[in-house]
Image (cartoon, rainbow, N blue to C red; front, side, top):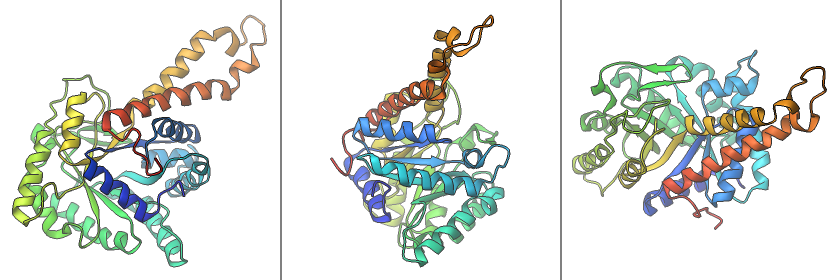
Amino acid sequence: MPVATPDQYADMLDRAKAGGFAYPAINVSSSQTINAVLQGLTEAGSDGILQVTTGGADYFAGHTVKNRATGALAFARYVTEVAKSYPITVALHTDHCPKDALPSFVLPLLEASEEQVKAGGEPIFQSHMWDGSAVPLDENIEIAAELLPRMKNINSILEVEIGVVGGEEDGVKHEGSNEALYTTVADVTKAVQTLGLGEKGRYISALTFGNVHGVYKPGNVKLRPELLGEIQEGIAAAFGTDAKPLDLVFHGGSGSTEEEIALAVANGVIKMNIDTDTQYAFTRSVAGYMLSHYEGVLKIDGEVGNKKQYDPRAWGKVAETAMAARVVEATQQLGSHGKSLGA
């Protein structure tokens, strides 16, 4: 199946870790952006991850309705069907669920997967993110510890955030001292003491090393990807494991240099979230199309315009192709290009 089974998803992450590459995890909010990601991954010969935030799920359900659980289920069902036409494997993930959104987002989706697994099927989502970065660390870990057994029981993976990603994404905003943007070995040690290193359920960790969501130019944010290596070494020493015991996630990577991305991946990043850059690629192409086809998409001075140009499929194809090209670029930066399970 083009949508990964739990075992296939685990294999994807293991292959990335062993092979020193990472998968692009692209945020989507419509059928067009889903199709763009599938197109781009196929052109790149790369597997990948499609993910949806609370805001994206609200939009899937209808912007006047904002039923995020319904929207997320619609997202998953759409991908499951259309991905059958593409020769790559994708995983489905929910991104950035803060505490106040758990009852309307992750928990009902988890319940839906539990029902499906009980009936002999696979979980609807292969992984879910619990974003506890806005609550005290002890509470963050406590909630993660409550979710992890349920995830393990359906063979899904939990993503946790230990640290604070600056900026804002879908209304989740963090402002504070610069020190809060850098996860410490002590923070991660406390999390591992409670969550284990896989024996209690598999989880992946979004550690912060200066990351900021949103738009910024290279050099405007002080990333320290070497910190990830220091944390890996600290955890390996404290718990007597092999090198790089943690599976890491890179958030807030827009504007990062190729060198910063490469060092993060070398230090154990196996998933990198991409949203701002693909949003821009999609919308920039639409803006260019509208400006260059001005007289066709508008009925000017009593004329009728050009239906073939204002048909949403015309500019939609342009937007999807532009976004797909940015997805290809991401696979090249992350090293997943040409490494699909089916290759």
